[in-house]
Length: 444
Image (cartoon, rainbow, N blue to C red; front, top):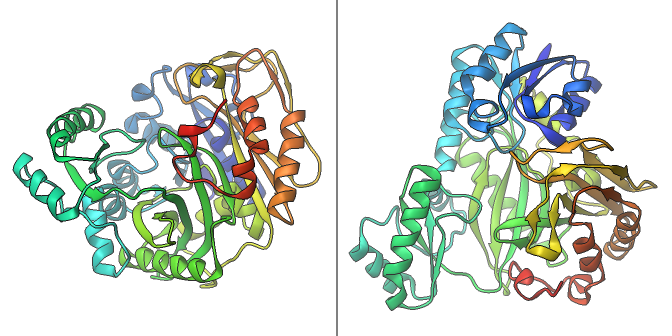
């Protein structure tokens, strides 16, 4: 087992990892930018090293600075959390070259799954259901027109190196294809330094359902059931829950088997997620594999009593998984509490938190790095924390979440708490009647 782990991240996930390390008797090193010098991860880690100024490229994305911090503190492993360098092939490789264990996927696995077109080809070969679309990247506009006719409109263009909805365009008819092709390529090139695009059939009225997986260094893999992430805005998740209200036992078994096929196809090591789109007929299609811990891992932990950060660390240290699949025996919902103004198109609201009171009670969990007097920097994402409620049934979980949101007081900045309060009262949400298009008609 590792003696000291450096956490190459910030905010609530850094604090989350520090807590598990301490429970495992492992020393921790926090790295931080000057904007985060007063953060809780810096306060609670055994050691802390400043790695640069607020701008991410010179701090949390600086591989050289992070490796230097690991070497001067004699850390024998690095946990990247999520975001930043968590799915960076080069970072994983540099860690290997310096004899530091990267707690995550290998460079080959990151490369194979990070390129969406290559990932899809791998899944097709493994027998995992995939959305009909182009074989590999689209060469030019002529190839684009040809593929669209074969796939049949509506189609969606996607950036092969994409994420967060960038480089993505839905096309309903041929006369709109040229403009979509040009704008998607331009946006993808600017965002990712790679303007490669591929095409898929656009699935209408889809659910976004992901399967949590774990794999060890010996080729074994298991799944830890599903999470429904369909409530999202501009491809950014807002609320997640498990089990999915759309799920059946038969569908869960099929999707679980497909996720294990996906993991074994790339000999996946660590904890990750296989994401699917599920149509109204409950036909499901591979979307992507995330080779890292997810923001919403918390709800899986709550319904199966399983510390996924601990599992990540154990797998990275060479331990085997049990080979057993896990199924939810409770219901959990997570609301992402962001420093955003939901009354003003969710505009970011950085600033100083003047008053902070967190809810409590049985079945209420909060993962946060915030406190009264903490200043939310404008340099990073706007997440303040994650509010998780778990209960025997979905109805009870929603009622518990309503109560917890009423108790959650954050003053000094705008937050998404009012949005979540209204969502919990929405009749369609209460019935489980929603898709990824839910926010397009949600009145707030």
